[in-house]
Image 1 (cartoon, rainbow, N blue to C red):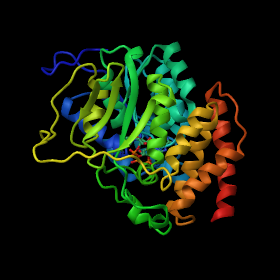
Image 2: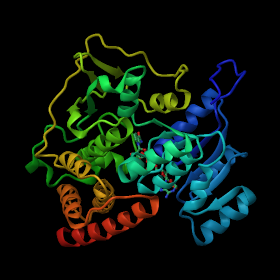
Image 3: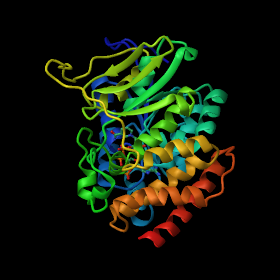
Image 4: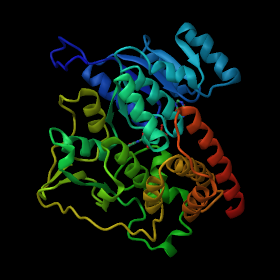
Length: 391
Ligand SMILES: NC(=O)c1ccc[n+]([C@@H]2O[C@H](COP(=O)([O-])OP(=O)(O)OC[C@H]3O[C@@H](n4cnc5c(N)ncnc54)[C@H](OP(=O)(O)O)[C@@H]3O)[C@@H](O)[C@H]2O)c1
């Protein structure tokens, strides 16, 4: 990878931005514009006006749209001609571009294939799509080994762990401590959660994110998925991963070493910082974020309430079972969150659907992306049946 040069003499790798219209994608483009990094390719799921606007703003970028059909697809094809392609394979093909940094901001298990393709092509994968590692952890790690690609996390907690691990020996790590904001329902008991509305669940206190991850933050499923993500990224056992609730979202995560030292990464909650670091790593560039003002500010930490938020434990459970279990949990959660957002099930049903689906789908080892896709489909069907029963 070219070294970062702020005087413009050399350039960072061109960016392939997958999920370009989403929260991560748009913030990535903001970083790219500010650091004057070339945007080589853009991908999204729908033939939206937002995507067409981005296609116009980056006239040299190759384009792919995964889910466009019919007239919407025809309209995009005639507007952008030879530089646009369609379907999941077209999105993945963008990730194989030579010497690129692929920012994967796709939501859901659909992000797995492009992650694998990026790593097999030897690219840097700036990974926001935690579902890649949750659904296909061993396959993603193997793709990096085989292709020589490198995974640099974008998730703020994993970026913090990554930064706290730079220059250290893995055998000196005693524990990873992931922080969780606790979401909008922190402090509430289980009985208080039965009737919460979609609007309340979408009102995250510290982060402005897409709807799926925002609901996952409210159930603590997001942290559950992040525990699995951390296990695969850093090769640390589940017994050595802890979660602590930290409502201010200033301490983004911590690493405890065998000598008792704990190294943390702090900063105002702003996803542009971990996105930028994943792109510029191992160097840093200035960012327009306010100085961290700690004077007079209380940073507090709490033990998570695993009874009120059973999804957290489900993450450890699925992670320990291994094999296809995390992929099943991930798919069940995607289906359950969609049903909750559509008003078909209640908030507490999300955990019920996840747990029952995890128990219903037989577990086995996963060797390639096709197997993950098959398990994902099986789990979605099973989750649909559970929803019919509970909804
Ligand atoms: N937002 C955050 O602050 C944050 C923080 C940490 C981690 N993450 C992770 O980053 C990922 C993205 O989150 P987000 O909040 O940015 O989600 P989001 O705002 O909902 O955006 C999702 C993006 O994915 C695209 N997409 C969906 N399915 C696709 C497919 N099959 N192929 C190609 N593109 C597809 C969407 O395209 P359309 O617009 O066309 O539907 C959209 O661009 C998630 O894995 C999340 O857990 C996000």
